[in-house]
Length: 299
Length: 287
Ligand SMILES: Nc1ncnc2c1ncn2[C@@H]1O[C@H](COP(=O)(O)OP(=O)(O)OP(=O)(O)O)[C@@H](O)[C@H]1O
Ligand SMILES: [Mg+2]
Image 1 (cartoon, chains in turn red, brown):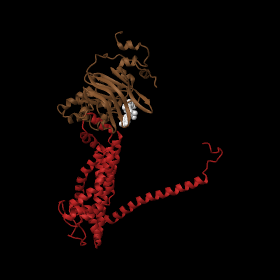
Image 2: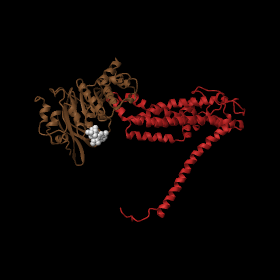
Image 3: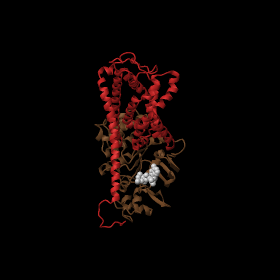
Image 4: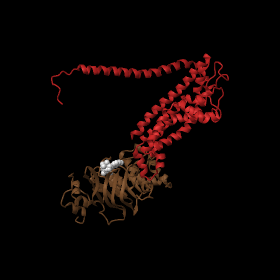
């Protein structure tokens, strides 16, 4: 201490000026990168809207494709694919949700650090797994022997969203104050009853939000569907255990591969429908999540 | 009032910096022993938190535990209803008997233990449910479903909260004031009709009015329950408890371990303590 001369001017030394310059350059670079990310999203959504908006009409949403195959006729819609996607995603969620919630309960309420770590690692790896790999796995497991089916696609989607649901649920369970668990235990209520009666209700909003996020993710997932459920048809299929089910991502893929410009336009239209569904789902989920965090953490 | 032991004691050798008002009833003849602790040590992992505690807690008596922060008061009360079981590394040695049964014996179910030995915590912790459901939830689960409305009313009356909430039983418990929430927690605890109530600093988050309410309440509850209260407030111990245990910290080789220094009738402990350390503590002369 005390190595500064009291009379020294308080202006920046050349060294400090150099550091300040580096600082400014770094900051400008980082800001540009951040703006670029927003721009990419903006341009992408913009082009989908520009190309797809002309397709949007009530009939596009409520009619099945015109003509049985990709023959370039104008008109028709993607109603069967919207229903199919909803069905596939619904069944996938029905499979992944109970499983994910149970895993999260195990991780937060029962696991010791030693058992929790490998499970969490496995979930992270599963989350990072390329979905085409998941698709191939399910292809080998179900499709190679029984052919394409809705259930195979749903199973693949369930594998994709399982880590997502588990993670959000776990985060929400951790936010439920220990005080409340203590209060319940002190009343002579068993652990399971405490979880069902106190912990899960406290985390419910957050868990639902996680489900919405997972649904949005599953709705847009394409790679596993190419291997398990790639069909273009003008029929509405409701039997998940039967043959493949038409769905939005595969419709987009099929239309865009078609030689007819009329169908390229339909690909854009279907893309617009999908992106709007996903964006709306994502944004509401995030808003819900933020509110839930404040609410649970609050008291 | 020469017959009053408290007054007689107050004129003794040293002055306590606050008045000890005689309670309604002087310590009566010793009642049945509820808890019998013999040479109890409690460990958290490698560290010994409390050493060598031996004491008996009697039925329908309010027993206070006082002492400096970190001396193991909470540790000991939580040992009495096995609330510490969920803490990794928690271990207890010595004998903790409840009506002659070893609480930490092999076949003992901690859930059943807590069913009989209720607990109220320092911070009010109502569930995010309605006032009614806060109280009715546990009895329903425990199979006490009959006459649930009456049970709720009785518990709320028992906790001196009924008049304040009887018109809004369906509204959220989180909307109550801190003092009301704490009385709700007491009501919740007595709704399952335990034998013992453990109160770990139940009034430390409350204002003086709410504190007085809870202290008065304890005098009523004592008729039915055996009460153990941890408190930082010596006046409070003097006001409500017949028996008081003074815990302190013993430092040796850098390890801080809680010990039970003295355990006696409250009046005796505050006015004629046998131990130097107790005297220093109750007269406000610390370490
Ligand atoms: N969960 C825990 N894990 C490890 N050590 C703990 C745990 N709880 C308490 N301890 C330790 O045990 C000792 C006694 O703590 P305890 O909470 O029983 O003290 P206390 O007398 O209740 O203090 P206070 O008056 O501040 O509430 C302290 O040294 C504390 O650090
Ligand atoms: Mg404490």
